[in-house]
Length: 588
Image 1 (cartoon, one colour):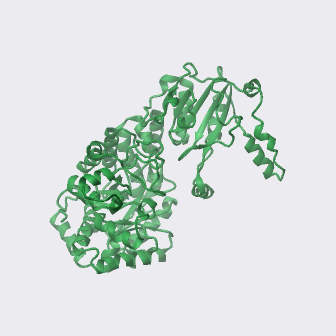
Image 2 (cartoon, one colour):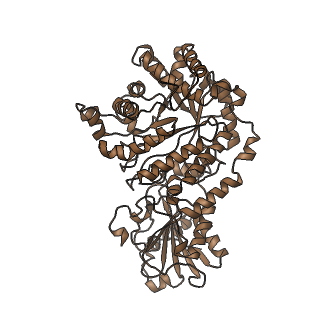
Image 3 (tube, helix red, strand yellow):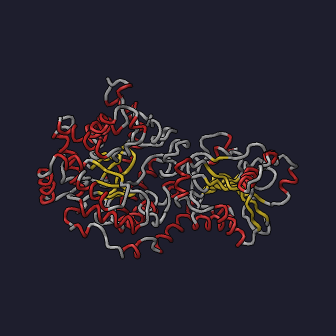
């Protein structure tokens, strides 16, 4: 069973007694409720009251909203909780993962580009200070995956890079930063390690192909480092491990292999028995196809607990899922021993966090704390420092293009390349979570410095304007790019192709001429900038000068313009992944 006097709990006899007595005094329904982490769908008090009093939730996540609204929600959750509840935030890149008015400090790949562990420490500290201010007590972070596959859009921008040693160092630094906040816990993700498969576990299977020796030296090293630094919890990923699982269970058939969250070989045999992890485990979201495509949901819920996960992330239908798990417990599918083991870890962590010793009114800070915590000047200064150190000159074949000054390149055309954000991305933009226009922001900064900058309007954009005005679009504009090269370049001295792609691949609206695709890199100086996903060389391998900024925040664009005008030596970032994407031609 669980030893609550060892890491990561270190509980006193009194604390251990609270855990034991609390479990002993629970009804079956209260025990089962502790196994669930639910995503709240409303801030209404009656809804939150039902979650806590009817379903007895062990933990909660929530949708984006301003800090004051989240804080009030969290106050209600704790008010109606018989046992204090975990309230988790996704602060993997900053406090903006806790609330809409939190501070983006820097994504994992951006922190990795600085190769500065202090920044990872401050990311863990500052982002979770903001989370704690609104009443959160757990981070679903750090992201300690390893970005081996450039096509893996799920973690390529979130992981600290493709070097296991750097990922281990920075993940541990993040954890230490978060642990400076009293009573705050971290759930590192996504065990046993994402970053090899090109597929997204939200919509397909995901596989970690390493054998025992390879995994132990890479992902295993990362998790071992975190465990030795008192990692509180782990989020299990829906990731298959065929070679490792075969080594653990030589007789297992391929058809019987399960993603980690449903595999006792991985969650118990590897994580518990081999790595010695004594902390709590929560599944990744249970709506992800990499988990749901293996069996009926009614079988999946109890199997995740029996595999070794202590908490299950998100109801589908609360009534249905709760009763499924309750029935599994009452009929012995989930044994009493396994239930007590899971509850001991859950309550043991709550005791380690000191939640059981606080009055309900003390579990969430007062509202005035927000004014002195959210977006502190020191957080914004940290964002600026990271932006300055992270920007990476990945490729520089046309030496002498830099520095960029008004005397050398007065007229600059900015080509704004976007990605395919999908239906959900469009919805988020419509709700106001899409951010600003980085091309317009860059243009303004260049003009302030004395450049005559303008934004390229594609033939497709012109046709959209015609349709918006009720006119019949001129389809001949599609071929308008097929003019003389001299005519195309005569009105500009340089082109900056700004790739504003948050996930996936760039979307080029025009493939036959025009200016969107920089076919003209030998006709005039072209600088390609990736201000989102750092893998744009896969689709623009002809780029002669390529820079990654990792985001398009104001501080980042300020630093970009400063470095462009200063020259090659101003770029100090290192490439934390293979931004050439393993492609021969991208290096030409």
